[in-house]
Length: 189
Image (tube, rainbow, N blue to C red):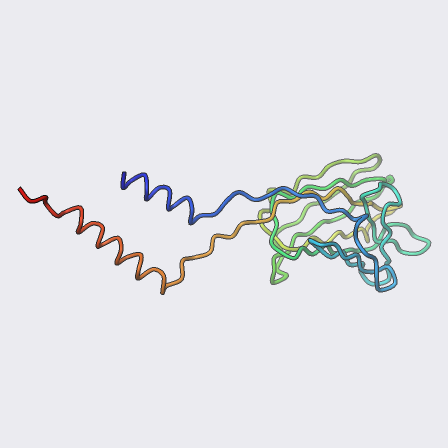
């Protein structure tokens, strides 16, 4: 009985599974001269000299467009919380197009990056191996063609286990010791 109770308590402390979600670029609000797209879960920001275009290639996609050049800008997607198990669709590029997608943590330190070089059509990129991060930087500046559009961004909200505060640890310890003492008492004969 005691082992079962301790196991149940350990599971309760470690947290629950994350919920899967998808960003909806079409429900976002463009502002700042079409340089910022605000959604409930995240903000998409165009880099210098670029503006955001939403739904041009695919309904739930966006790209950082440079006038007269195409989707060859930089855009940064920043969630309001840490995420993991991220994947996204990208495509509609041309021969010579490539991009780098870099994941950043909450302090803007690089977590990792992936290189994309699809020449036509669309593909899904699963970047779950990058782990937990807060932002993605989509850099199309090296594209020789039209550049990529990105969309259907799926993610799980990362669950970070919170430590038990020290003031709460003392009553837990005392309760455990008292419980052990009660178990050691012998019934009166």
